[in-house]
Image (cartoon, rainbow, N blue to C red; front, side, top):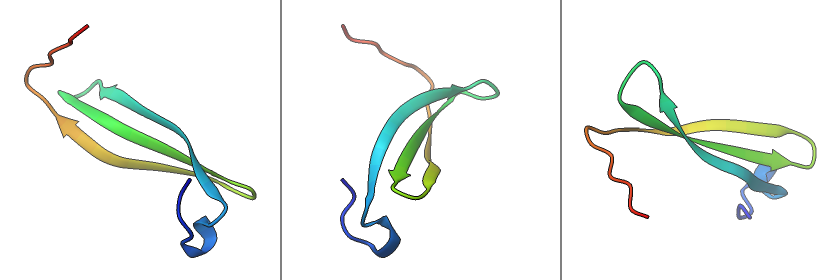
Length: 56
């Protein structure tokens, strides 16, 4: 839940995902915020990488 910041007081984060940018070696962190009256979509951070290590 997002804390009380004016119009965001009734908002919450509905989805967070990492998406690979097809044009460059980067990951985009996309945060979708929902509200009783509106939907908000933010692209907050782009993370560049040279090697990606996956640990199971």
